[in-house]
Amino acid sequence: MHIWAVANQKGGVGKTTTVVTLAGLLADAGNRVLMIDLDPHGSLTSYFRFDPDTIGHSAYDLFQVNGKIPESLPAQLVLETGHPNLSLLPASTALATLERHAQAQGGMGLVISKSLAILWEDFDYVLIDSPPVLGVLMINALAACQKLIIPVQTEFLAIKGLERMVRTLTMINRARKRPVPYIIVPTLFDRRTQASNKSLRSIKDTYDELVWHSVIPIDTKLRDASTAGVAPSALDANARGVKAYKSLISSLLNPAD
Image (cartoon, rainbow, N blue to C red; front, side, top):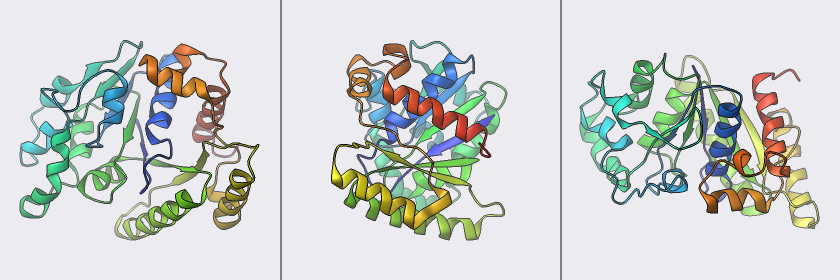
C-alpha cells in the first residue's frame, strides 16, 4: 500500500482537486484506490455527493474507540464513488470537535495509521485530504503517509501559507524516526499573469529541488468535473489539468525522472 497525504496550512490551493484527480488516474490504471477525507469541511466528501452534515458514519467513528479500532470498523466506513476502483472514507463535520478532546484522550495521533494497517491488503493506494490547520487531523495524515504532496497556489498569500507548512513539517520530521519526504506542487498557474509567473519564480528560488519541475495549470475542466461529481479523468482524460496530474504521478512514482 502506498499512502500519500495532501496538505497545506492554507485553504483554496487545490488540495481536494489534487486528491481526486490523482486518485482517479491511479484507479484508471487498475489500482484499488482509497481516498480519506480528514477535513471537517468535507469538500472531498461533498465532491462525491455525500453530505458531511448528515452522513451517518465517517472517519469520525475511528476516533471514538479510544485507539482500539475493531478489525471490522474501517471497511464498514468505506463508500463507493461510482468510479471504478475508487473508494472514499468520508468526513463529517463532527471531526471539528476532535481538537478539544485530543489532549484529554491522548494517543489520537495514530488513529489513521492503525486503521490503514487493518486495510493494508484491500487497497494499492491511499490518498489523504487533510485540513488546512495544524492539529490532530493533520498530525494523523502526516503520521500515516509515506509521501507528502504540498499544493501551493501561485500567488503571494499562498506562499506565506507554504512557509508555515514547511516550518511545521521541519518540526514534525525532527520527532520522527523517518522524515516524511515531500514535494511542493505549484497549482492554479496562469501563465498569462505576471503575478502567477512571479510567484512561481519565488517558489522555485526559495525551495529549489523540493519543487516539482512542472505546474498544474488553471483548467475549467477540473471545476466542471467537480460540478458533475466525477473524477476529472472521467470527464475529459485529455484536459490540460488531467495531463499535468498524470505527469505528477510519473514524478511521484519515479523521483529520479
